[in-house]
Amino acid sequence: MIFVAGSANLDFVVRADHIPAPGETVLGRDFQTFPGGKGANQAVACARAGAAPTHMLVGLGRDAFAVTLEASLTDAGVTLHAVRPPDCPTGTAFICVSDGGENAITVAPGANSRLQPGDLPPLAGFSHLLMQLETPLPTVAAYARAARAQGLTVVLNAAPAQALPAGLLADVDILIVNEGELAALAGPDGDLDAQLARIAVPTVVVTLGGRGCLARSGGQRLSQPAHAVTTVDTTGAGDTFCGVLVAALSLGLALPEALRQASAAAALACTRLGAQSSIPTAAEVARFLAQQPA
Image (cartoon, rainbow, N blue to C red; front, side, top):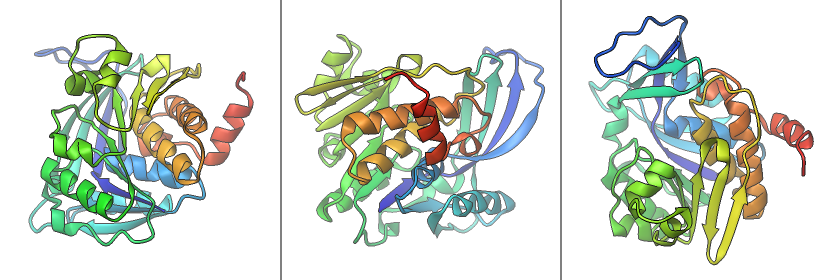
């Protein structure tokens, strides 16, 4: 079983021909709301990957936004452990999506910022803890330490990018980052292999967008090319990758096959609008991979 601890936001999404520059006003077109938040997206991706029971610890308000988020998570098969701080709204995110599929995101954390170390329930029976950095860093570190002590594999998606204490990294088994997040942790000098080598975590995976992903696990170097798709919206693609990767590993798949499945799921997520609404099922990923070259 997988335990996800992290954020949930209601996403307010506007489509426009381009993302506004500082000081620029852009006339948008379509407006929609979608369930989102890195933690919730990754929990939904884990659950939809199939055969990986998924629980999630999440901070929510006592408002209508929370009702929407709870429904999306439970409909995906995620078991919720909700914390509701008094007088604190549910988290929200404001997203502009360009016609090219790129996005710019501003998050108001709300109840996500109120998760505390003592909120983590016992983790008996779980194999993996998956976290991100949209909740307080001391809380993330405390959860990693507790999970390590209970024998779980600790997976951290170090997003949004920020410096991390050595103590937290020492409790992480698998670190997932994009290129910017890798540079923030390892420094910008050298190529990707040099940067990966400077991270003191047993397995590090760096996602490279349209170039696929690269992993360093022990002394092994793995490269997974991206799958060609027509991009509609990249929101949630990285979260889909994280959730499907952890689900595959929890089922006993080797890292190369887990990377292949995660990359395929992330590619499919780019072909649809929204975060959780774009996450494919295990059957969709299997059909997609069956059509891809070996």
